[in-house]
Image (cartoon, rainbow, N blue to C red):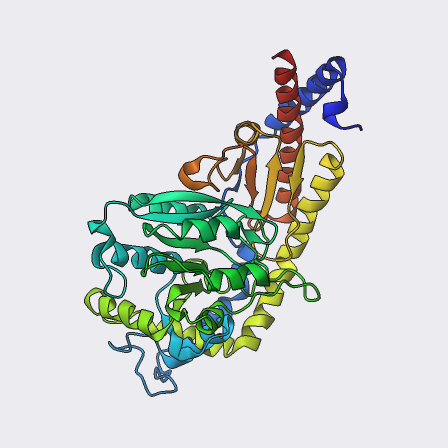
Length: 429
């Protein structure tokens, strides 16, 4: 079939009638499928269930350093957990603090303490007239929600194939009101791309006007590869910043939420010793210690980085066919039509789809009307405002293959129908 923009009005009207009929048939199927978030599938969670068998009532609940994990203490986390997550991120365990179940909570707390008490002795943000954050977009909606919650002004930074527009980033950090930048550097949410070495080096060499500027390096997908023989690589950011003489500038976050159990893993922050002292000084008022039993459980189950990698290969075996099914459907049904483009990630949890301008909200709405819930159009931009109304985040992980096939077919149908309607509408103007 030729590209939609090459069709005349009569061809578009005939196609609209055909697609509308197919859509009405799809609505009669009574679908109830949710692809709004990147949730691990039940089969992925089942893989980790042997972790639950590690402990029993007679188990010796002390770690390798002799810490009784049932009791108070060890605010920074047990040494085995610090080492395990440090290996995952490529940093020394002395630069790691282990927290509770999810890194999102750690990022929220980090922003919160910056607002109320300042960063390493700097003026608390709540006492400043203006606080701004740089937000590469399309990006992670929950990052944007945190900054909006605290009343921080968000500045959209366009994303390129190799990462954020660093020319803009370097320009904006000259403003002392700019206090941070959100980054998902590997298999980004939602694009699925990985920052290039050049982008990472320029990031590490930023010269911000604000002494309390921090790079919020959310390395959520650092081990989430889909292919054993094709994997993106990412420089270790703490080392890059140290080499640039700016070790304090980066705060790196990660967790096992999509490695072990969603929302029940262990999380961490990796940073300079100065930053960690700032965090720990605040934590002493907040908590006596996090769940060290869960930390020990993870250490005994995964043991080391090789154990994590072996486990992630099992995740990939489940996720890879799902990604390939969606990508094959997009190519087969939409390739050459000129009504959409999409990313082809080698890891992570998302595929990013760009429709024709002005179509994303209508596509998501039509999918929902037919029983498939997607991430809201605009969610991948600050304030939920996609300037082109074109980006849609596709999360293939949760449905089984049969459900995913139905969902993908419905999605491309909605893309086609909305695109035809848009072209007909535009032709009238």
